[in-house]
Length: 88
Image (cartoon, rainbow, N blue to C red):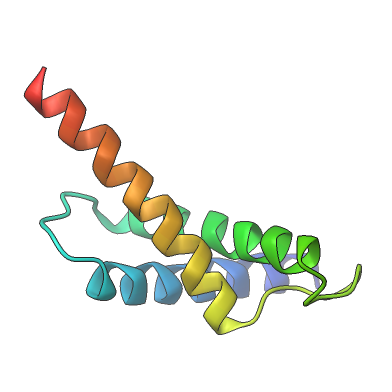
């Protein structure tokens, strides 16, 4: 069943990445893979933040809102990095 969990994480991460891209203003050159990665890592970041503030227990993962919040943070950092590299 390990493969099923990974596939679902990728699918949910991609959906979270798309939602974050729709919320975040500005042009985003990221493609499918970068969108999925931002969503997946954003979910992990949302879990970390949620556990740090006491919202989630040790065995709980982030919900949709915290996953989107984490993805928005990463997408903002991604925008800053790509904007700087295109200016220089």
